[in-house]
Image 1 (cartoon, rainbow, N blue to C red):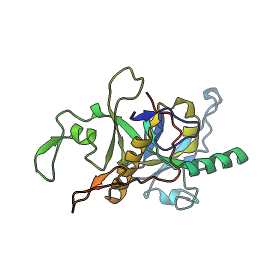
Image 2: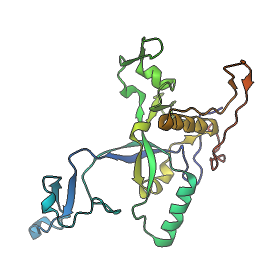
Image 3: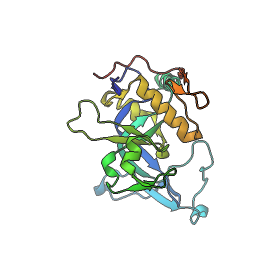
Image 4: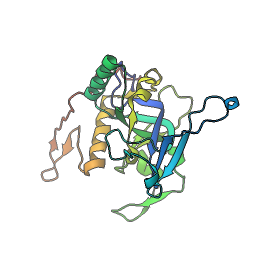
Length: 243
């Protein structure tokens, strides 16, 4: 069965976007406040910010809203690149309805995880197998989904090269919904049904260290096959397999 499918009209879990910003805040926190400085007219309009480093400058920032729901504008380290969409379809539909009614995206965010090229992992990088205590290749670990931190992606359909990728669950982030809506037509592919099930099971493993199975497994006691057919409500079954 194909690993990938064509994206459907709704934005759905498993969709692969080409250019999504994934940000992380690193200490110290730096608050950006609109500056009152007016540059010379010859410079033209400027949207300037004054940066306050906390906690050192805390007494210089009036009416600090870091603990409020709306938060504060701060500096963060951001990487723009491939990302896999993870938010559930019902949340997407609700947020899109609200956007259509109000015309404002507000502070709504959807979840995504960055996607990296497998080639970014050094060829000689290795890790100790906890069972055999033998060093094994990190690329092999990722490719075989032996780690709960990653999810392997084979080369994208229609790609001009055979580059392999992986999703990094450790950097799952909330991203403003406009980044996805505005790039909806640029989606590269989505996961086919069985691949999506595998993604969900890997996510469950990442968050809980428990495993979900979507196919027949063997009983550890009697050795007989045990049919397991688990489905998550709201999965996208309408995606046409990429073949």
